Length: 94
Image: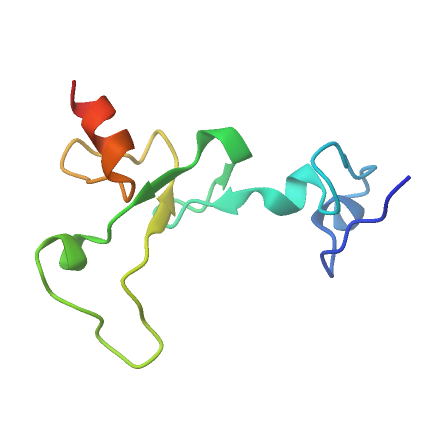
């Protein structure tokens, strides 16, 4: 059995056996947290969206910010949001 490389491993913290099907990081450690409601987002249900102020053409607000994306769950994904990946956004709008 492979040991999760995340420290601390989220599976170990919750008392679960790490699911290592995707490599050296367990599935729970690969999950993200919704930046709007705080819910855990499964790996295949993540919506990476352009932050609202970036979508409006306003750049980073400080030295530690970049032009990246934020992660939101399906419940928090709004019609006004724009997905970070242009191809996925085009498919979503069809």
